[in-house]
Length: 300
Image: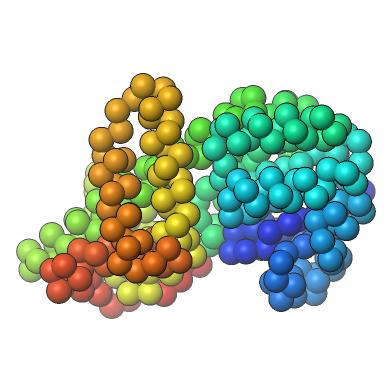
């Protein structure tokens, strides 16, 4: 049996690694915070003290990390000890240029890169029902498909390396635009005298609904805003989107406005604030909250 390594056990990576373990894959894990690995070790995972120690004992490695710089640092630690022919499966959200550059670096050491970012939210990752967007050679996709099907239930092979980076940024870009729009819609309903719970239900059953409304909208109405995704991460993705817009010659007027709004959100609440708190800017400005009964603090 192939042994996979998993590096990066945060909100998302931790859930994806658990899916592999639940489906019987042999997994060795590592994170800067060993406490995050407790549930994985209880499920039979092995612990490695460093990325290099992990790379030395596994066949292939998944990573889910917060930035291109961290991904590169981890890769450079692994490359001297990874087995020739190993696959690095990168689930972090990176820019296409980063993916292509790091893929070339891996190739120099006999390691092949397959990008596999995911989308849909931590609550779906925890169920093994997240969407996986894959870029890379078809033979790598076929080889690792059983593992990909363990972490997600909708798998898309988007094309060669770099393709998944583009579609992942597009989907996240849309989510942030929808989030700002949903906050404005809910505020219109509140200030228009509507019952917010009924208004949310009506929107969810209408042509104006969206995945964001049906999921993050509930966390806004609860007041927890707890989507396990930060303002900093949102701005990283919006920055990638704006770069693609310039590169591909596509004017992104709505995205530019959304990025400006998120910059205000980070200034107001900090980079580690929940991305859904972007709606709180409007609540605070109007001194009108968007609370309603019957909505969960976290998505399940």
